[in-house]
Length: 337
View 1: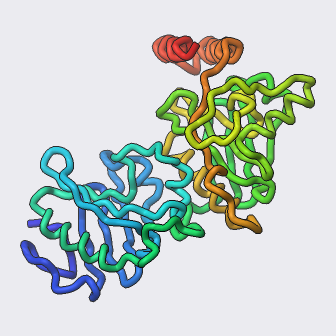
View 2: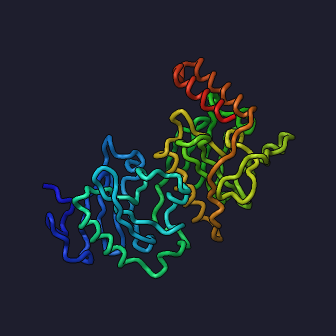
View 3: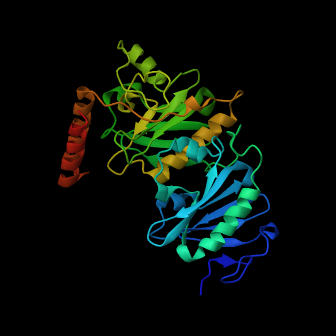
């Protein structure tokens, strides 16, 4: 019989003390190993395990990075042990900016309801280890970011990161005319102040790089528009954390790649964004305010929609998307008008 705990106790019993450490609490999709100064989260590999967890593999969470620990009823006879990180402690959650669904939250351990007493014990022990500043934002990242090199395929190009530079290589089937005119892009992390990630599970998913000295994303695109004799757009509705209007939509911005039709999935693009953000912060001489990580996007104008539909038609004629995929995506784009 699997009691969900190893080394620190026996089935139906609560271990004498977590301060001996080494206990492993096994849940659904993950196990938590309790060490003297951290919780080591190991994610399972399997067809039912969220792909983000499989991509992360394991994460070491220092006690000092936690702000609180909760235990609540879950779905279908489960309980959820949730270690809540301090704001600013984890580059993955900073990049996600509140867009992760509960099922993809790496700080949630789902357990069968019969282990509630055991889970409550560990929740109490972890709470006792939180510092006096647990409720305060962290001054630096305390959880390691995914490691470079890494890359992923977006809808309009391939993004790669070697630890020092981010490169965007455009696809002829997806990139806008503005991006083709700008050419392939390379951005040293030393010239950036942050990264903006909008989940591919929402409309207008993208990853955008924020240059140093910018109040919000889009300054690189604004410079490109000025070079072409145009003017950046300022009518887009700002995201919830934006301090100034965003000049350009992501599909026109050479400092951004866009998601869609299975491109830029969460388990690839979010770890990428977190790795870039951690590298940017590490290379900065001064702390960056929370506005360096932004979320949200305004609606596209009709010209942008028409250009995307044209590119989608090229994919369809080339046999790269099916009739059903073409119809579904076209309807989605038209619905954004």
